[in-house]
Length: 477
Image (cartoon, rainbow, N blue to C red; front, side, top):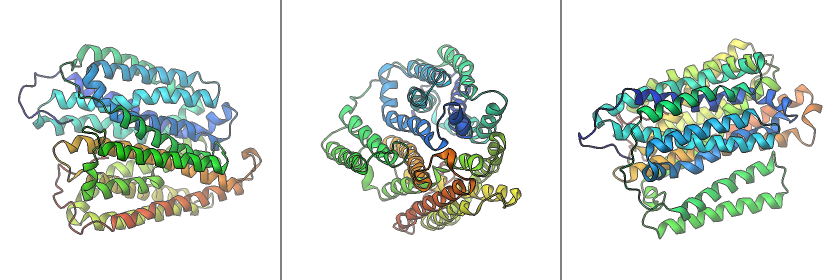
């Protein structure tokens, strides 16, 4: 959605950015606080830690599926009403998660939470775009994103502390008072946004695209947690690919598809989307895999594991100016080919970490990895969007958001499948520490290699691709 170029905005309430910022923080915190707690939750639910990825994937897939519908729902029913509904669903999902007696119940509750999460941030951003004149957007959006950037830093630490001092249920219960306050304040201060005519929604394309995402994810989960027969996995994979092909055919014959095929005629967008998919298969799995590695393979406590992740998040935030400098000084082709290769090597390098490695070296390594990862995300996202204009900007940004969530969920599913494969038929409780360590090391090497594949994609970039980069174009993701 594009902001208005007119000056017809009424003076917006100063509470609007605060409401959206708090919702963004709640969502980002929830996305990182859970990973550190997964081993403790697994013990409480009498499950193997290697099966807990479904709780993360269910949320990410739900978010990815519903992002395309968020703008239409806001236009159709009013942005304030949808934003309040999103907070309500997110809070209800949090309560159901806290009450979950089984992994299956928890996974279903995360779907409810994901429905709220999918609507909260896009609709919140849309409210800001429609409430402020273009000249104020950079300042307001910058303010809104700051609390969200602290989520990856505080989440792992807070998650580790909660499961050691309280119980894992409080990871979800802390959302309830924030959600209740957000619901009430949003009803008081947010504009209704009821005067926008909604275009017809591409329900057929939405169903086909969603079916493709779900079946492709389940095909990877079938190799791991679900332990499906190879024939069933192949069937799911073929169904996913067929759904993608059906969507492509449908979109070519539809005036208003959810994602225009014209996007893929833009070289930088096509390569950016494809590169995002492969690069995030590896790096997207790390927030799930690494806290699990520290606790189950190295024997760290939950709080220590969360604290160990802090250098990664701090370096990621600090590296944003470096990413901007590099993209002004060098071409996208140079930055992305070199940085992607370095990222893959560093992911594989986690296979060298053990209890014999001094902790200060681990902290330094995580900090360097966080910086490299941050540069990668910023460069990929900016490349993807830089040449989009007019009506394609909104559709392209929406598709990028979907691909980011989808790639991370597929990366988690792939890493969990690899981990289960290297563990073999042994029950997790029967494994020796050396066997667990070896399985994690082999998994890191494999997902590092998966990330390096993206180098071949970025080598297809023109040497001068994306040269119109400036301080306003670089995406802070």
